[in-house]
Length: 154
Image (cartoon, rainbow, N blue to C red; front, side):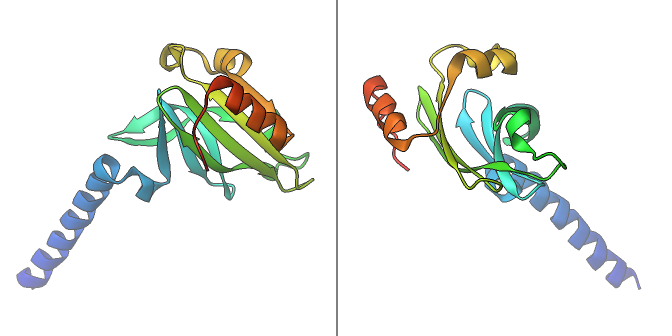
């Protein structure tokens, strides 16, 4: 009886230690991908990824924040289903590039986030208005990346 109880208690303790370790060492296990400057790509409950300015962070794992890409206006369709979601995002010290897809119209969008300002301490609305550019044309996006010296590749 005590042996079984001891084994169950050991399993529970190991499970919680594992969860704690994932928050510190493997945030990707929890669907959190750091892009630098307090910006994260998260696996969203609605079946896609989003990019947020992190506000709910435990260890090295972000669990939520202010939505940057897609914006609230573009994320959902008229009945509340996820419409636009992030397919991929890459980052370096100065830039984040992202591409999204839309489930309704199947159009791809491309984004550039400028991290050269001190965006960690800014309001998300300021970041969206000042530091994020969006493109619906991949050639225009590629030209802007080249003009800005962005060498990030998918």
